[in-house]
Image 1 (tube, rainbow, N blue to C red):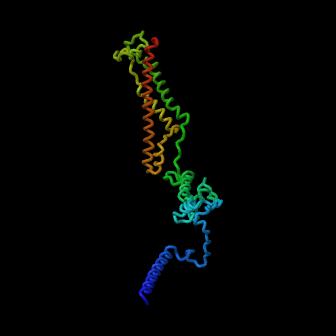
Image 2 (cartoon, rainbow, N blue to C red):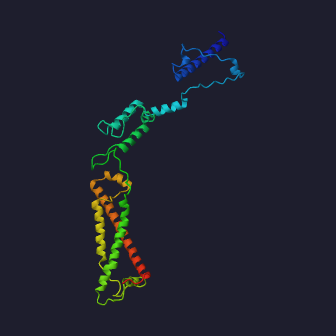
Image 3 (tube, one colour):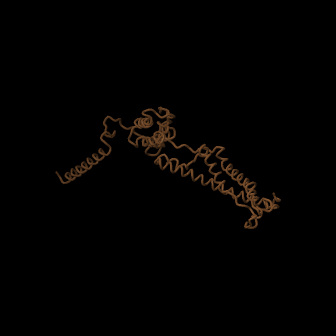
Length: 309
């Protein structure tokens, strides 16, 4: 064999080994079941030459089908299969979760899930579970009295104020002014008349009018009376009526009302009473402010109204 023949045989052997390696790599990448390696697969249709040469432009007509686009189908499949749990199993789990609050029976106010329910037809299992939990939280009945609320127990929204609750501050103000008017018109003149040095011609308005421009230092001016104890008695009476009739229950802030059932009973009792007493102190300060305004009105009227005997 000549040198030329040996070189040609060596070149063919090298090329054949490279082709074998390339075929092995292609087969391992595509898989042995790929149609390209299937002998029974029908041969691909031959395209005309003018398609490659650019003589004729062929535009395929899009199929008029109602099926979703491939990327939309892939996105929906990814949403349904990202958890790795079948949709039927997820629906059964949600049904069991909804029925576990009532010993296998669904809570009142929540119907049995149907196949047509959009909550169970939702492809996102997390959204379906959140919808189920929101229904449980908003509609399930509460637990036993004194026990912390379960997942199905919700905090009652604040009730709107009744007409009596709206009129209570006005009633307190009028009661304080009536008490002040009684002492100004009757009690103080009685104490002044008992003084042996009382001036017969000096009227009630004259004594109160003097407080508008100078400090009262004369013994013939406005006389001290036991108004403080009468005012305290009036406040105790008004607040006692509210407590015993429960006409104005205390309303806690929303966040505190949600956390209160989870606290110990003693701490809940202390917090509720603290808010009640704080409201009573606020009402007392309002009545004191109204009393000061009433005294100022009496002194102002005494300076512009003629003498009142």
